[in-house]
Length: 418
Figure (cartoon, rainbow, N blue to C red):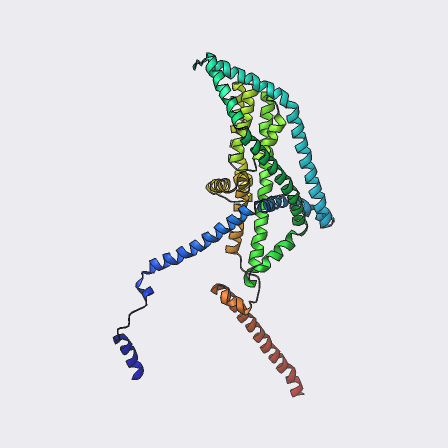
């Protein structure tokens, strides 16, 4: 009777429900989501701030990771040929550095040889533009045009100090580039030598019950990055060869430097193709005339259409499955955050994150046992999975025990009969 009277007394006492129960459930869910989102956004903002403060380290690490993804298949191939990993890594790194040095030296030499002719073409084009401004539809006076030129010269003279300061800043940037290049080589060598061990060491910070999944996600992300880099190199070669052949047929000077520029621009999605194509058209306009420039424009558009409609679906579709809108937004965000380097790294980073997230969402952990502290943090489905394994092991052991008892009984019966 006392137990039945207690609820009635509690109901009649007039105690008010907690305040949280008076708030609608939808509002409570929205509030919980909002503060968690704010925490994640704050963590992301702090991470971006740290990357900006340590930009040299972040950029060198990223570029070294891209190059490691590109060179790792060659290291693996040499290892299959019975070469030690250290020797294979050094051979691939030195060979890649030699190829890069040779290409840069050749392009610089070609540009230096074609520079005097280029200056003559530019002067001739400027004279043509000046004559058109005077005798063309605008009908400008020669004195007015000369006045514009004098104003430009005086502007340069007035801001000479700022230009000199900018030049000194550029010299400092060149020093940072040289330092970053050396750092990239060192980091790349360690990635090629001990990439697996480095990733295994980093995943030790992950809880035990999720460590296998995180390691697998990282491996799949790196494999996706490797496929992306190989596909990008193939696309870049096709673009450079196609546009280079077109420039040679039209008669544009500096074909090889422009083709090399197109090759490098292909590594920056969307932006690189537009900028390098515009440079090729501009050089053709200055050197060989507007008719040939229109022809070069048509060649550039045709090659880019081949890339967009044939090469990208065929190669990139197998390497990474990213929607064009996601690529566009990633490149835009990369340019806004880190300029050209951001545009270069945005799509590879998005591809790696996409592959890692898919792996984490699909794969089950491989560890058969969980520590006590991990059971409090692990998802319920994971606990059920492990409890099911424990029950299965217990059933098998009990069956083995029953089988052993039965075997002992059957062995004892002959002795009894005897």
